[in-house]
Length: 114
Image 1 (spheres, one colour):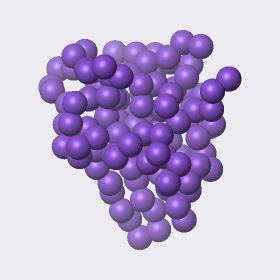
Image 2 (image 1 turned 120 degrees about the horizontal axis):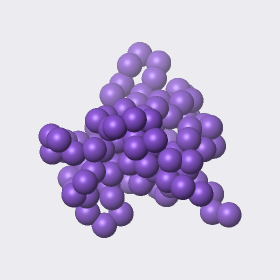
Image 3 (image 1 turned 60 degrees about the vertical axis):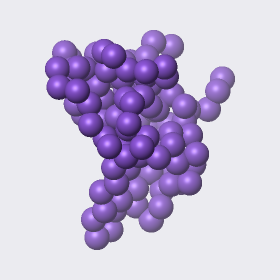
């Protein structure tokens, strides 16, 4: 599977995972955003100069910043009642295909192996 396909597949396949499962496979998020009935775990992956594994340096330490001008993906796991309800992608890119490639570096660790 190409990385863009992995990212697209993950948006449906990861729905229903628990917060504990996401933390176990993706590590500590770059940041967490809480609302009254939802919580979002945000990860930063990819980037032109990313380290091995293509998770931005510092993202697992909670800094959550990527150098300007680089292509990267912000992967957001939206949780309700402790379970993934939705997986969204954002960040600078040159189209949906490129964005998906960058996002795959975060989500592929959470997908079941085949």
